[in-house]
Length: 269
Ligand code: LIP
Image 1 (tube, rainbow, N blue to C red):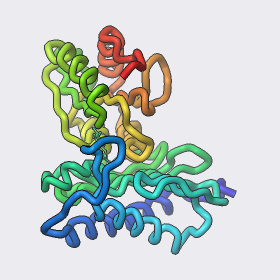
Image 2: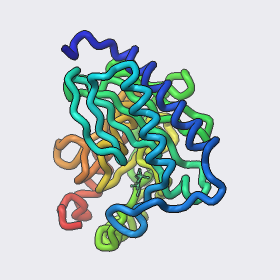
Image 3: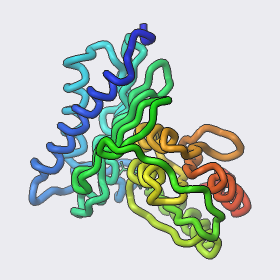
């Protein structure tokens, strides 16, 4: 069933849906945008625009591919019969969006038989659309992107992110405090998708974060991988909620080992 699918056609549809959602969240943003609801904590917020953008994306896909499955940050999981699944974060960097900061993006990853084969990260306030096709490369606004050469940890500009629960943030702060003297510097942009794209574009040497979801990293993980990054978790695991690390191979190893030395692989936070 799913082997008849052309990843390039999926990319075209994903990009069409992402750009439609990006236009919506910028042009229809209410001046008095507020928090519609919260999730894992009072600061884990959802706006009406998150929900509306995901509905737009789902509609655009279903009009053309009615048998596909979905996993969306706001709409949850819906099964399908085609073997194709759309993994959607309608606004990655929701808090940035809420505060009027530019680092937010529409992220859409497309899986065929469980493998991500196409991905789009559209950052409308940054004027950038990142795309990738499995095995074919990654691009920003149509131009190929490639990771920086591997570097030692002391020269690495490393991004990370923090969860919404105070207990996890406490531990994450301890890890960043201990890592800071070992690296060039730390950045906290607020969007996993854009952090992964920054690694892909050579604007970061590495990124790591515990607590991301599939929708945060599906598209950005493919984009970073296709740009030459290693994207994974601890001790050979795939990237996932316990940890995502993305960096050129040599930098990945140095960052991974530094995090293990700090106990970041102990799942107690
Ligand atoms: C965000 C992630 C980011 C994380 C933020 C937040 P959201 O996703 O992309 O990496 O550090 O806390 O979870 O909630 O804006 O879609």
